[in-house]
Length: 310
Image 1 (tube, rainbow, N blue to C red):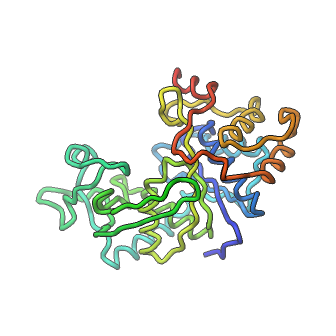
Image 2 (image 1 turned 180 degrees about the vertical axis):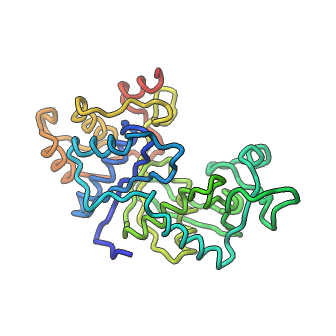
Image 3 (image 1 turned 90 degrees about the horizontal axis):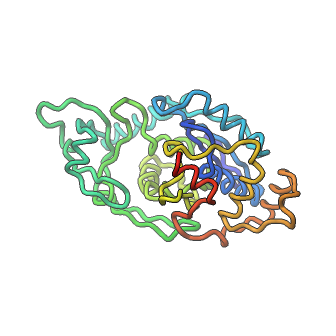
């Protein structure tokens, strides 16, 4: 495991489509937070979910970041090449009695689970063994009566009683792929990430990640969850909703739009600044205190409308 630098952050896109305004906001926020503190900014491609991966998306994302002059430190890391690390973490959790096999389908859980802000709460159907006639599908982590609190650098503090707010959660999916919660915890620790800047859509999952960090004896990074960009219907901009890709033709304007979205100061005549000049200014003047402390913000009209009407 690497020794963390004074600041070590990352951007971790999923290759399920090209970079759009919502993911650009997360990239810009994490990049500037690192550069403002003379820290490192790493790039990790979260390509572990092969069924959702779009051919060519990884190359497209990397090319877009390069054309926007967003320079990352070190080689790009790919989750798909890190399976042995995840298996090692699973083995440790299994040895300590935290894992069990679950035979429930998504539909069964949806039909019987209560829902909280963190999602559907698993009712514990298989917690004490698979019911008769059930075959194992996924692997779940026991949360017991665990309370986890966290302080975010932007959002209000979050406290979850995992047993009632999430229930035992999946660490290996029914298709045998490693679940996001485990992969991101192992990756951040292995890469020495000590500052995580990402979208507020992941805020509710952070206590589960902190719980995993505690079980595995891993450090907990500092977290900053940025407002997510929404379309005209108040839905998150996403590749699944056909959010308009960021192109090289509008890249300069998109960066300016992302800075405005995050309520950051701009230089005089920003349209005349080169990308390198703009990044230097933005890093020098980065101020998390001006970012609205909310979970969602409407995207600029040109991104919101295109997503809504696609």
